[in-house]
Amino acid sequence: MALHTSAETPVPVGEVSRLIGGWIDRLGPVWVEGQITQLSRRPGAGVVFLTLRDPSYDISISVTCYRQVFDGVADVVSEGARVVVQAKPEWYAPRGQLSLRATEIRPVGVGELLARLERLKKALAAEGLFAAERKKRLPFLPQLIGLVCGRASAAERDVLENARHRWPAVRFEVRNVAVQGVHAVPQVVQAVKELDELSGVDVIIVARGGGSVEDLLPFSDEQLVRAVAQCRTPLVSAIGHEPDNPLLDFVADLRASTPTDAAKKVVPDVGEEYERVRLLRDRARRCAQALVEREERGLAHALARPAIQDPHRMVDERADQVASLVERSRRTLGHLLDRADSELTHTHARVVALSPAATLKRGYAVLQKADGHVVRDPGEVAADETLRARVSEGEFVVRVDT
Image (tube, rainbow, N blue to C red):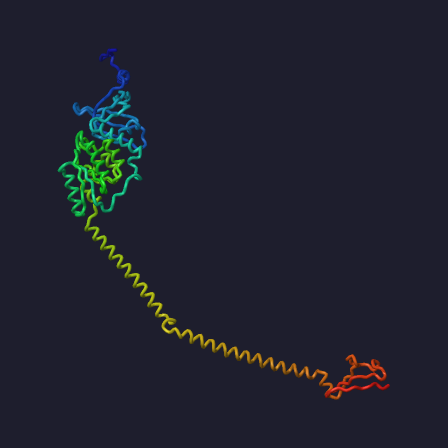
């Protein structure tokens, strides 16, 4: 509906802004293509702010979206990326500002390719193909190395020259394949399977020089990733340069940043190993020498003890102590015997003094009846009774005369 105005009947700014907002609200969602020039993701905020620019017309427009919408492409979308956005136009009346509320964001070109690879990466990781516990350890000194690379490529030359420089006796089983284009995936898969089944191959290296994302795309193919996951032989991925990360890097048992780095990680350096052996030998010699010296000091300390230098000294000291104890024992026993003899003499004298024999020697006699009873009272005897009289020198019989 047309708006009729004049210099005499102008429309307020707020009314114009309100009318513009009403017209814009009638617009449905639109798909918009542009380049991200500004990106703001505040920590903890639920909304992401970005600016979408059209380089052809040098026109920019503000875009807002919920964090969960942007998180779906956050790994492959950054400032400068081209995207296609499904959004609803919105008019902010207080400021008279037009913006877009995005409900879906899709990368364009390389970004779309990276997004697809990111989805494949998450799916394979969920299956456990990238788990650390399934990775195999590389042998310390491989005798035969399988190499999958392009024919007469710089990657092949770097691996062979660096490996043989580090360990001249190392041997290679090389499989030249296409490392780019439609034939790359089946040829690399076939070469990996052949080397895995070949007896004597200790480790496999898949090597390629640097290139664009599209050039390295075969090494992110799902068929190749699954073939490497089923490989029984340890496998090293040496694709591109340090920033390149095809999916082969995640499923391989070891990732090398470059083909040269792969040779260094797979083959030990003979000079370094000689030096390590020398250091270990010197360390073993020092340990053995220290052990012998410690035992020698212990033996010398033991030999320096008086008991070892003069073993009879202890016996002599103990002999003197024994002789002293024997002499002391003899003196003690002599004193005990003398004291006992003296006590015995005194006791004997007392016994003799108190014995009936001493009384008899003084002229007394003891009268006993025939039954041995001692007569103590005259009334105990009868006339003509025979008694036995005991004196000092003997005994005799007496008769009682009344």
